[in-house]
View: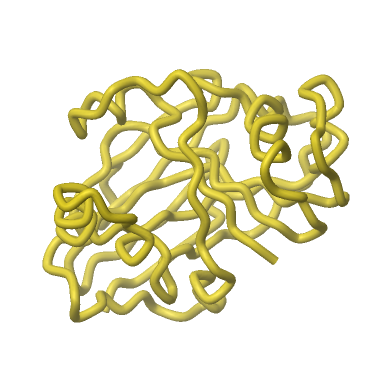
Length: 202
């Protein structure tokens, strides 16, 4: 199982970090060790002093596929949830300044907690509200209609390079509002007003 992540898929988020709007999806990977075991707290790693939350819609792949056309991409998933792409922003900045890969800022152990899965059924994947609350206050709020690249387009692009397998996870990008977390914070993530993920920061 692999975790495929998309950067800069919401224009407002790209702007808040001073990044350009991409002309094609920005793709990076996380290992399966990035999945945070259910009901475990998230421990801030000792190598970062500036750890940020990034709320995302997460899609689970349910068929093996390669070079998938956008018009057929909807056949390759039927479950969604929310997840958090934790990012060591200080590590990421340092790597970018040196022109180095920045996986260690994104792909470290426990950096990809995910919520409970929902069947898509009648849900429109390109019109879903996602929300993150920190200590009871909304810090991120977005709708998947504002994605620069739709889920189906992402699957088309990703499958040009990587064979998709059953159980692979696709983190589809974060809306604006990313920010730092601190010890003792409580995070709660919602999809369409349904609380799917609760997390305590240690």
